[in-house]
Image (cartoon, rainbow, N blue to C red; front, side, top):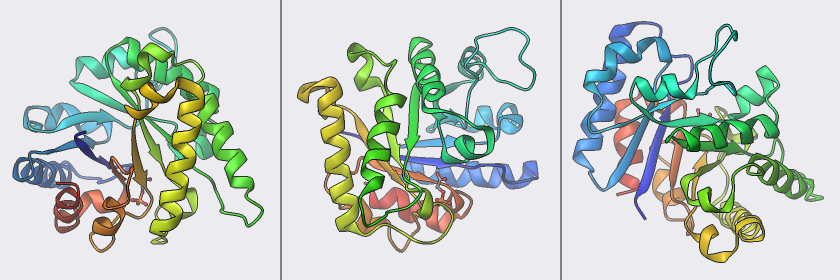
Length: 248
Ligand code: PGA
């Protein structure tokens, strides 16, 4: 399975010049490590200026509308994203869930629409805390099951999952390799329950949450990790390099 290094730029940078620097570093290290699929998700307003510059990257959006067209101010449809060259779209990022009230049901609608339009949805989910009673297990199960509820078996292999514990996003706190391993087993079990063993095995699971140059190697070595979804480090070339290299 080809591993994926996905870079979520979020609402950064402010200038086109800095955006060009970020895409250059993604492109440079994607070329240097051709066995890794590098997915880059810039803010949409920059895309037309970066587009001719994306090879050998896969271009991603950070979100999409649940609607295909119509009177929905401020939205981008998946068909539009495809038109500008996106092959991937991040859906259900915890920041979208928290700031814009996105529900797992909406995430599932987006995932299905993306697949139908030929894009790969990167479906994010993750617990806000790892409580000792294990409530996070029920939460993860519910989030994942509902986020996949509209994706039929025949399309299961077309989704990419991104397990991102919220407490690790942007905080510098990373999950231990043991906890990541046991969570990946839980996720795989949920996937087997939904799609059966054969289909579940084909679904890639990325880890996200403070992936940096100093922890990428040990996280990449955890069995079952198919890659990373990276936020803050996306704009730091030396970190981009180390993270892509860890997956090669
Ligand atoms: P982080 O963000 O790498 O800055 O923790 C990850 C994410 O939000 O996808």
